Image (cartoon, rainbow, N blue to C red; front, side, top):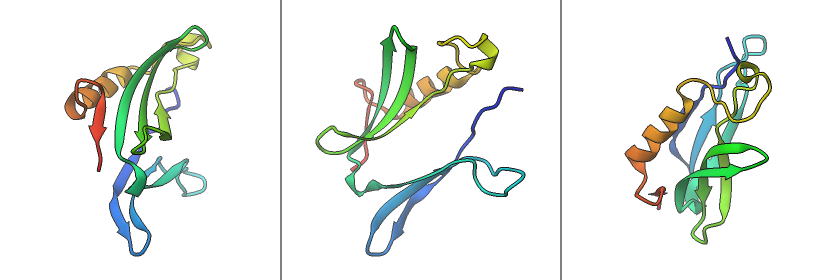
Length: 119
């Protein structure tokens, strides 16, 4: 089967004196018993999240979720990855079900402009 990263969400949680945080972490690596990836984010400056669909000739269709501050500056971008192996190394094809799940999340949480208010 193709490699893909699933994730676990932990949060929000408070670190006294430091603020509110959330963690996204991948599954444990079977050889090292640590997460393949982990990202801990201070939410105090995250005003909203956007679901963005972008298209460029270099990459094709892109789907992202972006955490943004009150001035609309991007703090973190989370992009769906292409299924390169399942698409003979070509851009533009995603793992089965990824785009549908992204669209489900967007319709469930975002307003008509693709924004989710966090603060």
